[in-house]
Image (cartoon, rainbow, N blue to C red; front, side, top):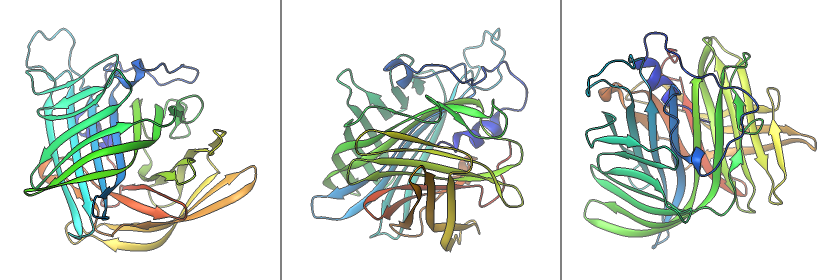
Length: 350
């Protein structure tokens, strides 16, 4: 769904700006919509997935780039005006370490520091990069303190349009929405470096693409989101936006079956029920890291238990002025994916 860039942009944007409104009925076009949409307020390229090393160990990873458009006067002639700002998070979930390894970067676009191309996916922040090649393959290269990722990601399925043809509601007002598509079941080959040791990896990833100008309603506390790649080739995205003080603002999602049939999930079709929690010693936030996910379809209610690879998968970016959230690799019967939990340390300030 995504997601954390909404909070990032909210920190930067203090005044009104003529941002485009997300509306239903807009047709997404590829490969153009893999690229940036710089007129919109926020946007992200969000990759999460599971890796297996050559010696049989499981790892989780996150590579995410965010773009935001601050309310800078277009007539400002200064080359230093922050017309576009980019953020990036990378993380490695290694059960052997028992905690999340992560790093983040921020820079205004330009000056060879950061860029987000239009027309196709090519996002860079210094030497971190996520790019889609002409043959359709995605590649990423990131080097952080203590670890590095180098991966090629091959699509095995067409893009999965979320909501109604890519128009994904996030609240009771129609403009509280995003343009949103996913690419599940990306086949991975590459390598992971830990310290001086480099190991070959294979695996499977999920890519989320969203852009929006008004993502959440003011009474939203945060959200629970999951994207699951099932072993039979089916894929599920589901989210719940939580209300301040308790309850639910909105839910949604999409289930694509192994045969390609798609079921769109509406405001009453998704539930998340906590099964186990974990308290962060660093932030004090208590996260429901194990949950029962339920979805309602025409064939009744289906349920899955989401179990984390390990509990301590919190990403704490406060030193960089960025948000705190839990982004973790999870297992379920017949599949694996990621669970994201935001707004558990404090309400998102929108």
